Picture (cartoon, rainbow, N blue to C red):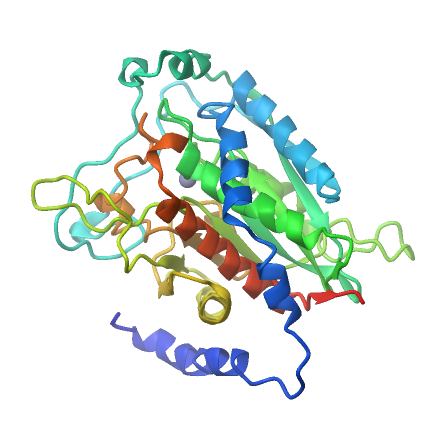
Length: 397
Ligand SMILES: [Zn+2]
């Protein structure tokens, strides 16, 4: 069990009540509408959405294949009945800048502040096209990135009684490394799209608003998420036009990011190889950042997800951790409750080599088995159950 710092212990006592509340028996025999919604998720549909994203290769930001992927995602969201909009911004990196992301902190701690243990293998971003053996995919990924205008797409389910308050459910649609970005982050993007589909069904209503955000430029430092905050933070909760009961930017109640959902084969073996199969004890990792201004609120949100997993996820449990890092929920972590949902903890597990496909040419759809895709489906069940509860989802009679 994780050691809990004293500053957070009091919060945890309060939060520990959350699972008990979620399990309160219903007094009548009415079916749980949230369970019905969770059952509308489907492994084959989730896989098909990931497969659809991989037709645009690694979807690297600043390329035609990235722009085509944004268009494709928007068309799918519209077809689900989820009205879309875009954020426009400019990405002009200084020529010498790399990804700008450290892999470790002083004192031997992982990025995010966790303490690595056990066998560790090297990680990095592949930049060599010749490492992609599939010539068709290599050609698809060939166009280089150029600085300039960028766009991201989101869609919105408007709440009935509290349209002025919302949760943001996000994933990043860009990738790199000369593969198909199937797991990083086709798996998170597809999860968000599948939730948009379920929540946008004509018989579903929610009291509060949900925004489904497909961030761009995550791999270069979350520039789309930062642009979203810069452009829209001050608009929160404002009725526009006045008297219209319309809120273009509802007040942000929380941000939940999904980034790499499929692969939890465990720690590398002593010889540096990775176990071939999804480990039976695989879990969904829900992380908050203990060194953020909103740590208490974020931790509380994380435990809501843990409880929703207990209630609604069919195969794999959830584990809560305190070192969220390097994802689009980061720019929100000092503003609102912010968590990430992943296959592994980002700092001490992925950072120690637990996912050998990470930013590599092997991150292609064909690499993954149904047991891998099922972990992503369980994350979708977890988030859908949690967000449905938080926003008061019901089915119209
Ligand atoms: Zn990612």
